[in-house]
Figure 1 (tube, rainbow over the protein chains, first blue to last red):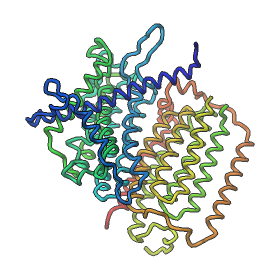
Figure 2: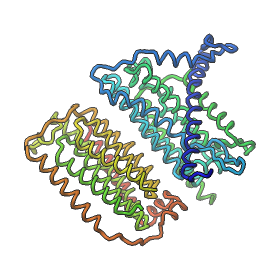
Figure 3: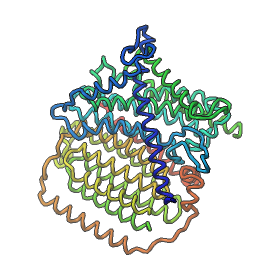
Length: 338
Length: 100
Length: 167
């Protein structure tokens, strides 16, 4: 039975999308557990170790948390704009998930003469697509703050948005260095070109700038003033409960996964092993876990930036550094003739 | 078969909607949004022709228009904010005196 | 086959544009405008301009519209006011709007299709990359407008800071 090639493509894309979505949602669930555990160990306490404990780690804890969140009362703040209040978490999660459509997960393989690519789409402007999705992610926060009809939510949302916009510029510029080295905007090409040496060797400063900007984008410590529990109540998430809050929470963790994946793909070679041994999705997972661990480590140890320090750092330190990185890369490339 | 006419007619429709928006609304922010709509309609016409004339100039034009529109929105919104600060109202029909 | 995404995106863009012009709540208008921008980005992809599609989403929907949403949230009352001082203005504007649409559509539907005159067929753009093609043109044929645009952005930045500063 031969199908129209377009139908085959659609079915293939659908299957890949479902696999990636299931993997991401499971990863999110267990990330919450990992975070609590890692932060507990750093703070010298015992993490969750009761629910379905296997060897002192509560493996079923995320499921218990999910059930608890679903059964919480789902309320509407008085005079909140119902439409915006409802769609804000949806937009946040949607844009967080969309970035995974272009991630290359594994080198392409041939099964029984059928070519299988391990990415959902090979767009030849993949890096621009990622930046565009990143800038759309701001809507979830700004609409969440507005829809809550609450001054503190609005202020938290505005601060968070301003922070994200500022660090987005440095993020994009840090990635430009990688683009200059790779000569292509397609993520699949960028990963394939790193088969021997990872991009971090060519772009160490770019990597550091990217990682700092990424942590600021995701609103993690030390940049999480807009949503810290001791400041402005909980920022734009104050008036959210139950499933909608769970969606915001999910959006934050999936954003963490996304920026870790982008850092792994652009700077650390994605699914390529060091010197190209045994390429595969296992290397990608290892690298993502490494970045997530570093982010959790920073959360457990570093103090928070004040808001003006945060903005000053983004504009006065990170942006000139990113520009200098592009300059230096350009000069070196012209001198070396690569 | 998609022809350039499809895209240019859509561009004309969006442009007219934007023009009516500028004429009908009194909130300067929404008037500004309608102007952006008109700009986007023109962009669509540019890209449509660029594709069917097989020239890249249309896309370059659109890129420059994008940049100019960004600058224009920034300045326009700053003006609206300054207007709001002095008049405490966002109704253009009330901004009918030159004395600030 | 390309007609299906075209008609879907075209209808979406037109309805969202009507939403911008008709809706009372300014925040809803801004969101409808975001839908228009994203629909137009989809149309640019159909027109073999993926670089412009990404730039459109990044710049228009991701920066300009955020600016709009900020200002709307901080300044605008929740619902727009009524008809205004000139009562006949609104119906007359709608009549003229229809006339404009009719005239433009008539002129464009009867127009003669222009003939191709450059080397950039969609296949060639897919081969060398849309970004590379636009970039090459920007830095060779259009270098002067490019540099002037950077100056324009600088002027706009300075102007905005001066205008928005509290005395």
